[in-house]
Length: 118
Image (cartoon, rainbow, N blue to C red):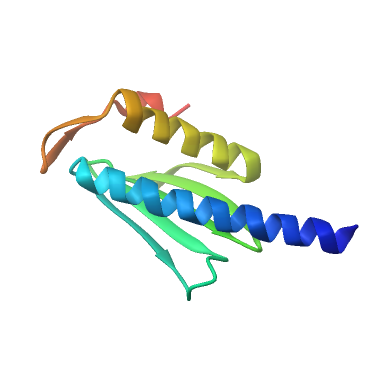
């Protein structure tokens, strides 16, 4: 049973990494500074970062060891979440991309910061 669960988690991480890569591409096309780095081609870990302007940064890390969401502003940590809560915040970010974020120009995104900080 545990071997099966470990394999399912590895597949989940791969799916999550692919979605993070896609989210970074969409954010870049909307004028945000975003990146998603992976080690190797196996997609077993990723570091996703996006700058939302005004020194507001989101970092999302995923690997076999866990999942974390860290939101920072002015080099101070505003929020740190792990596991399912971290993934829920990713969903909120993705929804903002779909429905609300509209970049006026590539240097000054129009972003309502109150939507992510709880």
